[in-house]
Every structure is written in C-alpha cells, then in structure tokens.
Length: 490
Image 1 (spheres, rainbow, N blue to C red):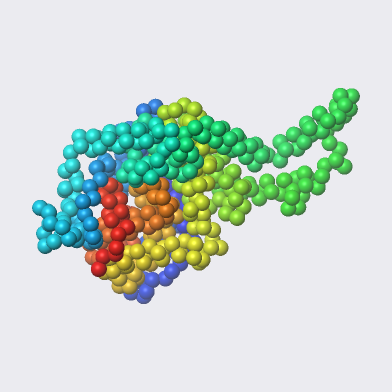
Image 2 (cartoon, rainbow, N blue to C red; image 1 turned 60 degrees about the horizontal axis):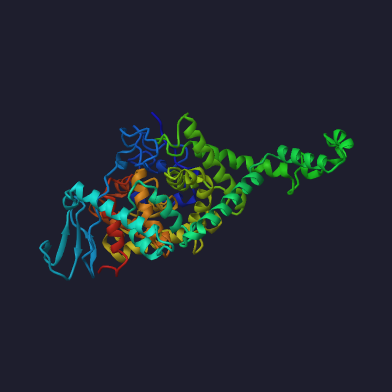
C-alpha cells in the first residue's frame, strides 16, 4: 500500500515546543503524535485514487476510484448560502457542526434571535439547483472574459464564489487574478509571447550541464577561427581551459562548482516531484503523460531555485506548484496547454511572492515570518471565539504551530482533496488584498466549524483532529470565513 511522506521541512524547530506536563502525559497515549509531520514517518495509507474534475479535453484515468484519505472524501460543491445577514457573529451549535448566526433581523428560521443553519439545510439543496448555479456562474464569467477590457472587480466577485469546472475558465481566470494576464485583452498575445520566450531563455541558461556549456564555448571558438585552423581547435589545450571551467575548481565563479552545489537541490526536487499527488495519474505512474508532467514540475522548481538564491528550493513548494500546472495543462485551448510550463512558472512566482517569507528560515521570528502569521491566526480566533481560543491555547495548550504551520505554508493543499483545494484557491486568489488574509479567515473558520468537538477534546484528540481535518462542505466553510470579515463577535 502506497504511503505519502510529509515534507522534511515541516519537521523544523517550530515543532519542538514542549507541551505542559499534563498535556505531555496525555500525549504519550499516542505513539509520537507529531509523526504526521515527520519526514521519516508516512501519513495515513493511500487508498484508491480520486481524480478532480477535468476540463472536457482532459483524460480522466481514475474516474471511478476512491479518495486517498478518509478525511479527503470529495463532496459535491453546493450553492453558496446566500448572504442575507448583517451585523452577525458565528458560533457552533451542536455536534453536527450546525452554525448559529446571531442576527438582528427576524426570519422564519430564527430561534431566540438566532438563525439556525443546519448541515441538513445545506445537504438538501437540490442537485439541479447546484447545476443551474454553475451554469449561471459560467455564463457570467464567460461574459466578463469576452470584454475587451475585463472588469477585475467583477471578475473577483464572481470567482470568489467558486469557478465551475470545464471550458477552461479557471485557467484563464487564475492567470488574470495572479496578474499574469492584463485586464486588456489586446495585450495578451504580445505579453504571453514575451514571457514564454523569457522562460525558454531561463531554461537554456540555467538547466544546462557545464559540459554542454564547454561544448558551446568550443563551438563558438571554432566558428570564430579560419576554416584552416578549425580542425586543430576542436579540442581546447590545457592552457585554454580557464580555472572556472575546470571540473575540480572550487572557485565561487566556477560553473562546475555551482553545478555540484545545485545537484543536491535538484536531487531533492526530483524526490519531491515523484511524491507529488501519488493518487493522481496526471502526476504519477509510468505513463509518458505523467513523466512529462513531472519533468515540467522539475524544470519550474529548478529554474525558480536558481533565480532565487536567497530561498532556493524548500520542500513543499511542489505541493503549491501542482494545482497551477494541473489547471493550465488541462486548458482546452491547445496553444495554452502546450505553454503550460512557462505560464505556470510565472504564476508560481507571483503566488509565492505573497508567501515567500514563510519559506525563509532566517525570517521565522520576524514580523513577516511564519511564526508571526500563525500568531495572527491565533488573534483572529480569539476575536471571534474566545472560548475556543482559551480552550485550545490555555486549557489544553495546543500550540497553533502544531497544526497551522502546514495549513498556512501549503495553502491547505494537504487538508482537503484536490478538487476541493481548487475551489478554496478560487476564493484565495480572488481577494484583492492578496490570498494571505483570506487564508487566515479560512483557517479560523475551519476551527469554528468543529468547535464542539474541539471543546470536548484533550491535547491528543484535538491534535489528531486538526492534523486530519474531517470532511466538510467547502462552500459552507468559505461562507463562514467570509462572515469573519465583519466585526468580531462578543
């Protein structure tokens, strides 16, 4: 049975916080509860693969197979609950994850000035209505995308509610939301050609073996000499081989020395790429299709690492890269799909620009580092649900770093199945302020939605629950997260 390993970088000093004596004694009932984040310990075994919905032209190899985790079951996207509320606050009601929204307005479902939204209310939405809503969203998005100059505010508003699968809409919308495509459609052709040419140059310059560099220098030298002398110039004499071109050179400017240093990172990238979504045939397996996709991921991560020496490559980046490449490669437009690697590279750079400090260990304790971001999540929870915050961080001493580190750095790609992750990313990328603030609200909503179970748990049970988040309705979770934009509840 295949087991998916968790990236080594998650086993950082952030996980070394020691719980209190009481909590520690409780934690010993489970064999190393942090093994879920250990590089040497595999996460729960993978079951039969599940494939996210594909655009019409994509091949669905695993259409009938099952989810890989018990908590990653795919839930059909339901229509978003219409926001008819104002001045509201959100609290959990019962073990079924019902949500009570305190409200100043009257309604048939109000009990003691509270609106009760039950999970049954959500589940009972008719599938035909869901399909009709998807069709409506698709029509709205296509209308907006057909304009000469796209209204980004309107596009963000529609996309934030979830982008329907199919027709290649998500591919185009994500490129717009990430700033890769300009709102002015007349600029697309020239800008895309320029960017794709630039990426091709990056690959030629950065992915070349030093031996190939030497051969090209030799070829240039030959061409610059007379034909009569060219034959004798095919092999460089020892005096013509510079120190930087010698394979044993240790100089900083030596292409060989740099090549050997890069080889360690390239090997790590290769290992991680091979572990990327082993449950999806798009990324894994022996097919030429899967190997080609792996090669594209490998190229993008290697070029990024060489262009960003301050960060290089950090394990987990492959998980953030995967959704982008998957969407762009499955674009029904053949030209777009053929250039997916180049397009994905630039969109990956843009997406990571808002989170790059989370991957820099030297900044962990700074105001822009990962610890600071996790602290902001803790404060957000305290503002909206102080009882739950107190139980988690004071009573049971569950440090938010134990679960939120992975949630935040991997943009929730490991907490939900692939299709649900795409839906969540629709909302994250649609925020004009950037995805980080929305991400923190979604993380806070995740805690609030299971508050009853958290309040009833001890250190061990809480940590198990948060490291293996239970199935939930994604549209409802995003609705709750959006409600947290308002004033904190009291």
